[in-house]
Length: 308
Image (cartoon, rainbow, N blue to C red; front, top):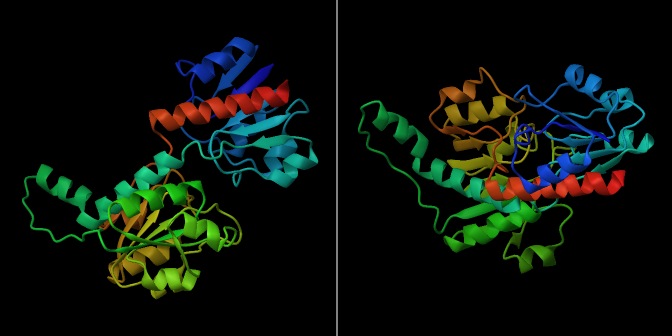
């Protein structure tokens, strides 16, 4: 059995029990040593003779899948979404696609909440100023009593709702596939997307990147938000039109933006990074010790079950 492992946090020296289990049964494991997600030119040659993949943030397009060797039987995502895999192309070739639902829900929700606090009080900018010898006066916003709008009320959205309610926020949500009863039971007021944008002090995105969600926050959506509202994206790059967000920030329409996912990853040269009202993290939402262990265990178990 030959396995390709592409998540950079799962390397040949990883002490995780899941990786030790994989090493004990696999004849050969090929690791990603590039330090980042693999693009087609690097990915395709590695798929020539493997039986399965533990997949990270690489893009498994139809072209990549169709170019893979005949032994490939499973793409086991080290993550909760399958939007980086062309599932239809995989199915056409008899390749199983598995994900790790719920494994990183707490980790991502806690990062989203942390980013909300960071934006509300301008914490990163104040840190930079003090380190540089400054002592600036600042005026922040309290989150208690404010309205949080959660776009995408899956496992992560519901975990965020629990924490937001714990600090006294009013939580509302929009999700076209989650029924109103489920939202209400989770303490989330169901609203339309238009209502959410118009009435939320903070908007947090937790939906996959699909044709229907690409640039779900576009120029029009930004224009319909409350003036000074905060926007957090710990889901997928491409949900926000970053050029439109820059214009909204510089015009004072948008109060702050926190990004853990970008249209191009890793990002470079973005105008957004010039602004103190922007917080940027390196797609690190799922990177806690606890979430890493859970995702690795689920991803390895999924892979081995299919190959068995």
